[in-house]
Amino acid sequence: MKVACVVGTRPQFVKEAALSPVLRSCHEEILVNTGQHYDYELCAEQFKVLKIPEPDYNLSVGSGSHARQTAAMMVGLEDLFSDIKPGLVLLYGDTNSTLAGALAAAKLQLPIAHVEAGPRQYDMSIPEEVNRVVTDRLSKLRFAPTEHSALNLRNEGITDEVYVTGDVMYDIFLKTSAAVGSGEGVLESYGIEQGKYVLMTMHRPHNSDSETSLRNIIGGVRSNGEKTVLPLHPRTRANLERFGMLGDLERDEMMLLVKPVNYPAMVALMKNARIVVTDSGGVSKESFFCGVPCVSIDKVGAWPETVIAGWCVVTGADPALLEKALRSFSPAGERPPLFGDGHACEKIVDLVSEFESLG
Ligand code: UD1
Image (cartoon, rainbow, N blue to C red):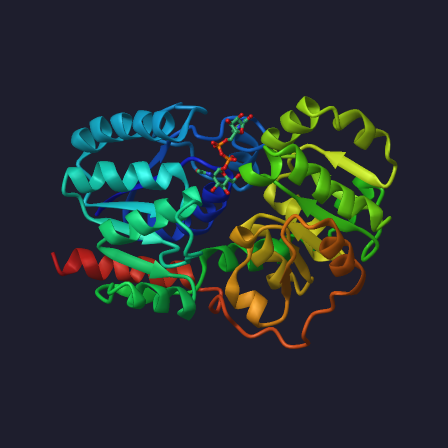
């Protein structure tokens, strides 16, 4: 079957890298990049290191307000889907690229498969919440990464075609972690030692677009006094500069500000960190895969599953809570297999094939 996969942001490139080889072994994949992320480190470098096939189509939409960005993608996708007539449109996660794909496909009455269906924060002020609620509602096949995600869907009355497959990000994490090994080379290149640094990421608009939140979060981390590696998302770098905070941070030898890192290097940095501080859902989940405790500076980035399991603590942007968590948070011993067995991609592709065979 002809399956159109829509990607656009860094985390979607990672998910695509996991699924694409398995999908291509039995279906014709048409890869569409909306162009939501376009910086070399966020996009082209990830394609290169993850050996993702060249996109068949690139819509090059770039940045913009939510409506402008999503609308530009919808227009491009509508033309494209009308032209190539896919048997299924496959979407990942909860970004504006996901939403645009869902709306364009639904209006053309094309069936949608949603990878990472069901996570919820129950807060419609979060753009990603809007994107996933709409996409889940419009989907034909819903691939939930965890039991908890499937339960969220059931609570919304969505019971048809919900499959708990495990998480494709766990599949690719296992492979990449094995390939990365100890990650010694990456640590050497940054001049850091195993277990002796904090790894921090931050990109959510309400953290990095607000001077107060940015100062609170950076202040909380700095007062911990530990070496901190901070790969900077372009949005965060631009805001640090805008608020006059960048120069001071760059002069602090305990703060290592680096460019966004590629996925294998990120895995090496995560697995060797003493603790991770993040507002990213992907990074908080991956720190759990690594068995490294996580401090979530945003409830949006915390998976309730890992919080309940005792591996992630949510502090928000409160500097005192953040400093305390960095000093004293210690995780529970066990890590339950919340995100599957590393074979989510095979399960998803089997279900796609079954969908095709049922016509
Ligand atoms: C997007 C997703 C978010 C995901 C994140 C992963 C939405 C609503 N948000 O957030 O769910 O967690 O990707 O990184 O879809 N910019 C650049 N270069 C780029 C891309 C963006 O400089 O290559 C800057 C632009 O100023 C842009 C801003 O970052 O306006 C935000 O980019 P955008 O794609 O809208 O959202 P992200 O914050 O990256």
